[in-house]
Image 1 (cartoon, helix red, strand yellow):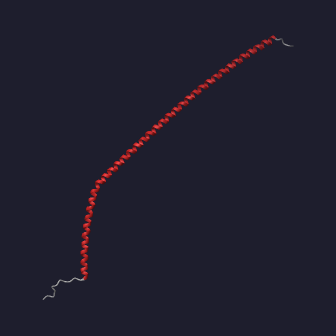
Image 2: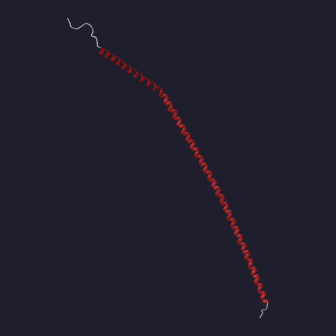
Image 3: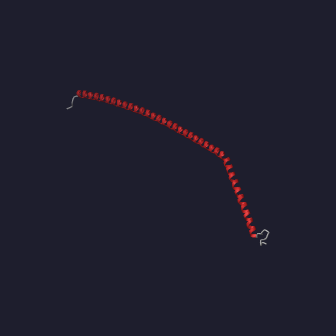
Length: 152
């Protein structure tokens, strides 16, 4: 006969706890792998769904950016045009004012020349009259002295 018992060996308390923990650990690992796979699948699905929306949003943003840049350029060109127009108007007003000043100056110069010429003419007339009077007085004085007899 053999010394071995026909009954299955009974396991001890710690061996049972160890087996239970191993089963739980294996189940947890399997569940974690399943959750990881599900998360990867969900991420791929969300990425696929979000890609067209992201592209559309990018297109909208780039279109809006282009529109803003175009409007900014338009406003900038309008401001430059207004500035150029204002500068041109100011320059023409300055030219007109300078022309008026030059015209007034030439009129003043002409009037001054006329007044100077009249004054010279009057001065020469007065001088000529004075010379004729002096000559007349001198001639009269000579004639009167010649007629008079000298007193001795």
